[in-house]
Amino acid sequence: MSPPIPTSPLALPSSSSSSSSSFSSSQVVPPSRAPAATLPLSRVWREIQGSNNWENLIDPLSPILQQEITRYGNLLSASYKGFDLNPNSKRYLNCKYGKKNLLKESGIHDPDGYQVTKYIYATPDINLNPIKNEPNRARWIGYVAVSSDESVKRLGRRDIVVTFRGTVTNHEWLANLKSSLTPARLDPHNPRPDVKVESGFLGLYTSGESESKFGLESCREQLLSEISRLMNKHKGEEMSITLAGHSMGSSLAHLLAYDIAELGMNQRSGEKAVPVTVFSFAGPRVGNLGFKKRCEELGVKVLRITNVNDPITKLPGFLFNENFRSLGGVYELPWSCSCYTHVGVELTLDFFDVQNISCVHDLETYINLVNRPRCSKSAVNEDNFGGEFLNRTSEMMFGKGRRRALHLTNAATNAAYLLCSISNHMLYYNIF
Image (cartoon, rainbow, N blue to C red; front, side):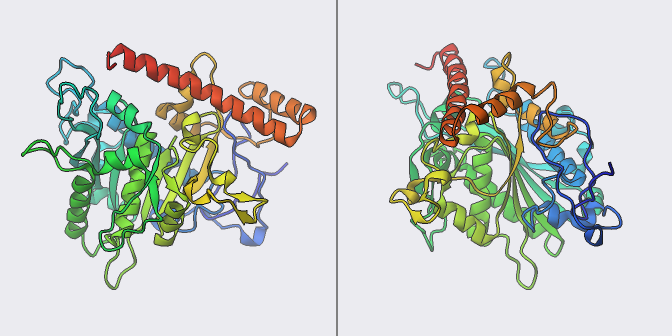
């Protein structure tokens, strides 16, 4: 049987090797629409950044998009590898390395492709010990980098990258639990009360060390200042702004992308707007339908790389979310404006290890799975046989509603395992 014809200038026939990731390679495009050859990244970078919402690039996964997801995932991993969690270290809760050495020390391939220009710190607006009234300390959360002159030729533009690690410290875990929706109000000239986001994420983004005269600015102020500086420095060049985040960091990436676009920072007189793209790994929901719609209106592009077995991607709004906003897809329910809603396009993976529950949310596992050979969704292999067998069995034994309940139960079980892990982590550090 001949391989499928590519569906876009960026797509190639998918491998017939098996995998547990749930990609499909069933789409076929008539020969008249098939491109003659694959184009280099410098020619198609706007499509890779989501200008067409990744149409025909997800299923099957375009090799160039696969390469770029991996590259941004690796850049993001430096935000974990560089974070110092040794309480006896002078750099505790900061980065272990200097800006010039971070990427090299983190094992990034071609560390000279980007220069780290600024470290970013976030201050959780939570005091774990109100009796002592200790001031909150800012934690290193990620960095800003810009592509070098040499890499600009390969990338086709000057790329400003911001990475955000996920939840690590106890303050951050508790901030994640503040799941109420609150108006973002990031544009002082137009508050837009209908645009709401999760209060814990917003607090982490906008809070600073206000108790100290010489305390750090908020994560937001640090970021907007540095991005503005870099855009002015490279004025007149083709440019992109790429934000990569994992878990909680994905939420901060969403907020920054919305913030940049809402303030018009990516608009340039007489030129195309600078694309603002989020590569979200294992990200939770961030805001309501108003937030999603406004991001779309502003042209913010979000590619969500998710694992169907990762409960974090189903939070907050485990029950009241985009799937429960309307009745029969026609009538909006009264609580629709208060439902959490995912933003962007989803690239779905499917992996689970009963011996290591936490792997369902691990960044390195996500990156590795993106690079595994892919197969049709209908294929059954050694890695996913159990899941496929159970799915087919449930289809024969239960109705659609019952199957949905089983899926929710499975997700809830995974969430319980992760929450137990979090509780053990917090108890280990004696925060209660």
